[in-house]
Length: 467
Image 1 (cartoon, one colour):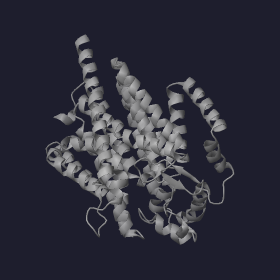
Image 2 (tube, rainbow, N blue to C red):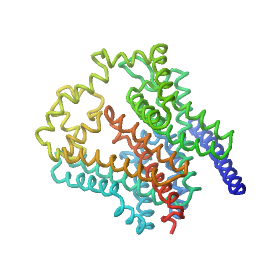
Image 3 (tube, one colour):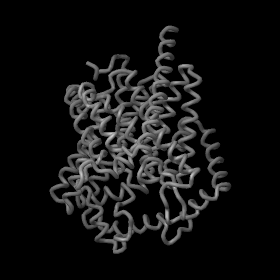
Image 4 (spheres, one colour):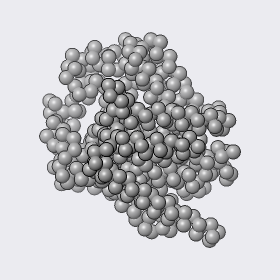
C-alpha cells in the first residue's frame, strides 16, 4: 500500500514538473514568435511535424489541442494560411478534431456503440443532432444551418473522442493537466494587459478590458472561469497524494484565474461564477457560501469598476450591452410564436434578428446573446426541450456515478463536472456560449474524459476502452 502511494506521488510530481517545463517552453516560443514575426508559419511547422505522432496515437492530439491552441487564438484566427481564402489555423484545428476524432471512434467503435446504446445522455444528444440535421430541410438560411450542423457534430465527436481516448488514470491526468497548463499563458498575457491598461477597448464603459490571447474579453473570462473547477479537482487529487509544492501551485493558479475573471469586467462570467459558488456552497461547504457572499459584497463596495458594472444592470445606460440584450429578446421573441414547434433552422437566428429588429445592422453582432432564446427560435420547443433534457440526463448520469463510487477522487471529478456545467448554463442566459468553440471544446472534452475515467474506475476494472 505504501509502495503504491509512493509511486502515485512520484507520478504526480513527474507530471507536475513536466507540465511546468512544457509551459515554459511554449511561453519562450511565443516570445520568439512575437519578436521574429514568424507567427502562423512557425505554428504550422510544429503542427505538421507532430502529424505522424497524431496519426499513430490520436489521443495525443487532445493534449496538443489544450496545451497549445489557447495561446494562439488571436494569431490563428486573424492570419489566413492561403491568401484569398478563409482558411486559418483554427479551421485546421476544427478539421483535425473531426479527422482524428473519427479515427479514434472507429478504432473504439464497439465500446462507443455500447456507450451510445446504454446512455440516455448520448441518445438525447443524437436526437438533438438529428433535429439539427432535419432543420436543413426547412431552414431560412441553409448555409448557416449547414455550418452550425458541422459545429455541433464536431462537439459530439469531440465528446466521444475524449471518452474513447481515456484508457488509464495516467492519460486522464495528463489530459486534465494539459487543460490547466494550457490556460497559463493566456492568463499571463491577460495579467500584462491588466497592469499595462491594454487589451480590448470597450466603448460602452470607456475602458480597456483584458482579453489574454483570445478575441474578446468574454471568451477569455469564460475559458478561465470554466477551467477553475478542473483546477480544483486536480488540486484535490494532488493534495491527497501529499505533494505540498504542487498543491500550493494549483491552489495559487485557481486564485490567479479567479482574479482575472473578475478583472475582465465580464458580467456573464460573473453570473457563471455566482452559479458555481452557489452549487459548491450548497452541496460542499455552506461556510464557503457565506464567506464568498461577504467577499462579493465587499468587492462591490470597494472596487469602483465592479460597482459600475453592477449598477449598469440596475440603471443601464442607453448603449449598455445589457439594454441591447433586452432589446434582442423583445424584438425577436415574437418570431418564436410564428413557428413554435420546430423553429426556422439551426443557425438562422441572425436572419430572424435582422428581419425583426431595424437597429440590428448597427450592432457588432447579430447573435442572440442567449442560447436558450436562440434554440427556441431556431429549433422551436422541440429543440429547447431536447437541449434542456440533454443536461438533465447528464446530471442524472453524474448523480448515478457519484452514488456508485466511494472513491473521493472520483467524486471530486464528477462534482467538478456539475460545477463547470452550472457555470456554463448560467452564462448561456446572456451570451453565445454555444458558438464559442474554444469554450465548447473544453466543456465537451472534459465531460467525455471524466465520464470515461469515473465509469471504469468505479467498476474497479481496467478501462473498457483499452480493450
